[in-house]
Length: 85
Image 1: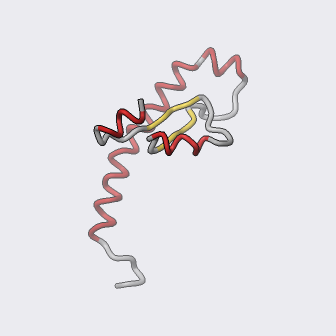
Image 2: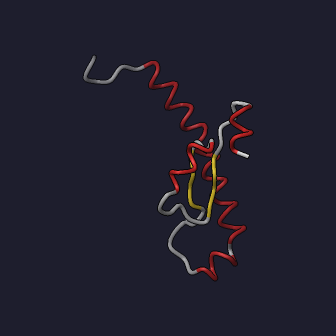
Image 3: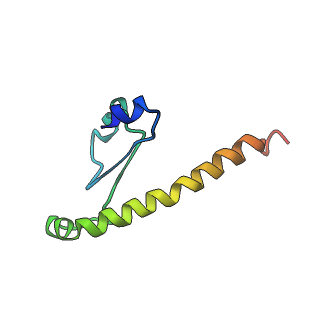
């Protein structure tokens, strides 16, 4: 799915239960960013039982970051570092 999204120049965010060792290896497959949905360490039973809640919360957090990132990029393009002023 990530490769197909990249063909359409679409950003790809992967939300997973955890982002463990080797998670960065998804980048060559077209994933721009990845994040764990767990807000803190939890038991497997709790993770499975509350998976929908955790996924919803993680998706909302991720979507709230998009405008923040866009503003940061716009600001970075219009301001020089303080050491240059």
